[in-house]
Image (cartoon, rainbow, N blue to C red):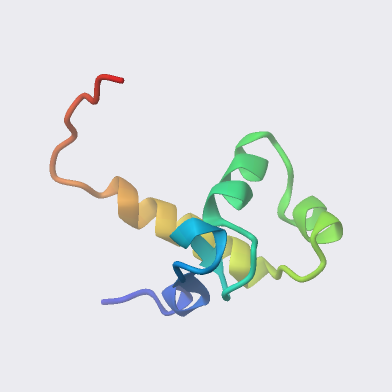
Length: 78
């Protein structure tokens, strides 16, 4: 079943180079995940970025969770 939060995730080649964003804004999923992994709470993120909602942040986490559900991972050599 598709997560209803995914409707908040958009990919537009004209916004942030086509990176996944929240609702066609310039807030990338990557940014939100970086802030969470740095220890910011949902409320701190919303205080700093008032256009975001708790649902937006949950959508980022759901998106990341879906990406992590891969069948196999290959080592990428830079």
